[in-house]
Each structure stands twice: as C-alpha cells, then as structure tokens.
Length: 388
Image (tube, rainbow, N blue to C red; front, side, top):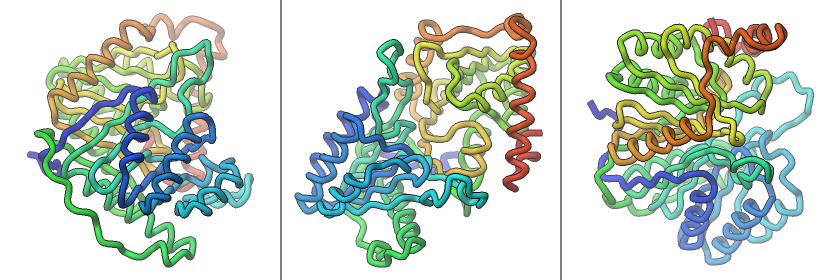
C-alpha cells in the first residue's frame, strides 16, 4: 500500500550544511511570493547572518517572509536582529517563548524541533539541519547531518503544514493579522517519479505518526535496516521491533553518537547496548565529529530523513517533521553514504567493550536511564509506558 505517499516528486539528498545552505540560500534568493522557515536553533553566526540577509532581501522584493523559531532553542536570538527583521517587514514568531529558567510549567517541554522551509509553494526543504554553522571545532569534522530538497506535489503539504502552525502560533500570541488564511500558491507540478510522504509529530492527531512510520518499515524489513540517530533512546515497541527483525535474519545496524553531547541521553542510550548486541544487532559510534543525523534506510527502498530523534523527547513531546520515501535512488544514495561513515568514521561496539573501563562507566547507563524515566514520569507524558 502507498497510503499517504504522494507521487511525482523530485528529491535531492543534501549532505551536511555544505550542501544544504547553498541550496537554501539559492531558493530564498529566487523567492517572489512567500517564504516559510522553521528551525529549532538559529545562531547569528556566519551561516545565520547569510540566511537573515537573504530573508531581508526577499522581503524587500515583496515576498511575504514568515520565520518561526523555537522559544527555547533560539532564546538567545539577538534583539538587534529582531528589530532589523521587523524593520524589513520579515514576520517572526517564537514558538513557546521561555518565561523563566526555572519554570515548572510542563508545557515548556513541548518544543518546535522540526526544520522546514517552503519557498513560493514550489520547493521545500526538510531534515535535521538547524540554522547554524556545522563547524563545531577546527579539530573535528563538520556536524554530521542530512536534509532533503523537494520539488513536486509533496511541497503543497509542506506549505500547508508550515502555514497551519504559523496561524496557530499567531492566534496564541494574539497577532490576529498574521493568523489570517491566505490563498495558497499554485499547486506544484509533478517534477519526478519519487513516492514521498510528509510525516509530522504534533500533540493532536499525529502524536505517534513518526514512530508508526518507522515501525511499519522495520516490521516489513527482509534484508537490512540501517538507522543513524544522534539521540537514541527507543521505547518498548521500537526496541522489540528491532530485536524481532534481528531474530528473523535482518541485518540491523545502528550508527549512534560517539561523542558526549547531552550526557544524560548519551549514557541512557548505552543501557540498551547489551540486549541489542546479544540479539546480533550491530552498533557503531560516530567519532569524527558531533553527529546530528536522524535518518534510516530499509531494504534499499524505504528511507526517512528528518528532525526526529528516537527518544521520548522527540516521540512524545516535540513538534517534529520527517520525510519518508519509497525511492530506490535516494535510499541507495543514503545507504551508500551511511556505509561509508560506518567503515571510515565510526567504531564498532562489541560486548567485550561493555565490560571494560571503570565500574562507574559500566553502571552509568542504568543510572541515566533511571533518571530519564523519572523525568518523563514527573512530566506526565508517558515515561513509564515508553521506557519500560
């Protein structure tokens, strides 16, 4: 079945910021009517300034520019740039602005984590790349991530998704003029042959859509599953789907974060290594730089690229956006790059590795996992059910 998948798209896999930002800036520079841009992080560095200047130039040409960034992820966005954007006519909204560092309001956990751009209703971008330079350090490889450029009918869904959230946030923040429904651009024409599906996670009708899309692909896999995910803390159903796949002879490969970025999630993730390794799942840790990818390939045909980690924060709390594709060309291109990273930039983990080192680092995964469960239970967002 192809329920939810849209035919007629042309998809381009973009590798890291080196591919993504030139493509995004080129599309913004060509915009004539409208731009929607969503991001969790937006740093005013060399990359961020280039994007901001491109948005200002587009507004000067008469395009309606709508920038929505997360109120926590972009809480340090400079006031002077907010004013520059406002003066240029760029509309800007901050999703759930932070009201206090120590606020106990659990709604603050619900973040806008997706990375989405739609220009003139004709070209869209979706993936895991925030608006910031991916050069973390001169001693490290660029941050490892992906995005997809989309031409074709799926762009209409991407545009409607961005527009719907924009109008919702505008109403909540009492900006009714920005919440008005505007005519949609002309429906994008067929641009290729790829089957693609926009998969979003929100807190209404799409609470489990991304996880369910993964599970369908995993449960029907026959040959190979490769998952690369920066923050990997899967729930019960996801873990057991992978274990069952390994039991029926599927080659299951996980490429995970090798450097400590967020310590709690990093060590909690390691708490699952033993059960996966015993089942024959291959685990690799990426060490050349910081990994931010959230992608997967199944049987060289199904693939997903997006913003959603496989952890409770993404799958239970945040607004996320992935693209799922049934396209041999894109799936093979992604698989080939993942296989290259596995062989050149990652270290394979063996059971014996888990028994090495000081006792503290052997028990730290279980302590971290317990803390995450407690935090999710306190939040009231299903931690026990998810992490059992």
